[in-house]
Image 1 (cartoon, rainbow, N blue to C red):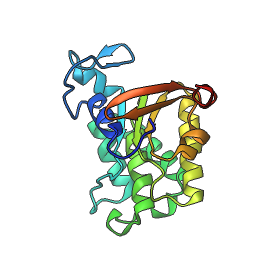
Image 2: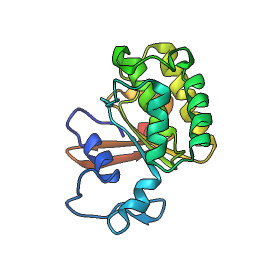
Image 3: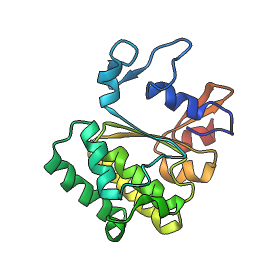
Length: 191
């Protein structure tokens, strides 16, 4: 979702995640009516806000195992997934350091791992590359590409056209809470 600040990008994601009620219309997540079956819809979704909150007194491994427990992921599987995610995000060396001293980019990567730990079908990311250096942004893009290849759908917000052009297969342009255009970059360019 592409649009200027205040266009409604974050609000849209919050409604899909069930964090805000929609004024009207319907929300379906892989065919599940999110208004009638909110718990079932939420099980399919991961939401990563632009300013993720971590439990600072936990280390990344503890945080991921805690989040996995909330999703009902069995402990042994949670440990394996946590290790794999920390390794792929370049956080293996920090796995036992408390999150309280982490940079914004490191916090963003731990929060992303937390969003992915239950292997959601829909991954929603609000400005996911903000605060990441070029190497970390590349790691995140690679992980997201792997998730798409495995069958997940990803919706991310940005207000930077170049980011949307490089990452997205389809772009939706929002303005004042309305979808004003949608398609591939080429389709929108010809539009």
